[in-house]
Image (cartoon, rainbow, N blue to C red; front, side):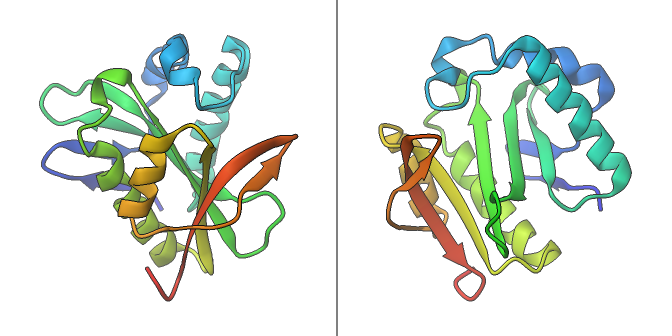
Length: 169
């Protein structure tokens, strides 16, 4: 089922093939990469192509672009995906261009994706992780109704862990 949400300020939708450059170039900004995994240009290109293939397969989970309503500017991306091998848990993730930080876009997007995740999957819980120093994203997740849990360790890195159960959403 294609995901498409429009708010008064932005649109969340599937990427179009011609938006590959916007997606890949987004990861050139070191300020954006402080709190997300660093990947090569080729890895980001492969992620983009996998994303397009997931749309064709009709998957409910995936990665989507966020675009400004005023000028169509590419703002960043958001995703819902299985949370590793934890059955019944879906992970929310996102990243924005720096010029869109601190304006409430992430909180709006998080509310939308939490609702979408519960309405379109049978997940019992939606989770998110951030670096311990990403206080802005931690505030976003709390505003989206998530609760802070015990830290989560991945590949030797300790991350802040947030979750919301279906009954809370």
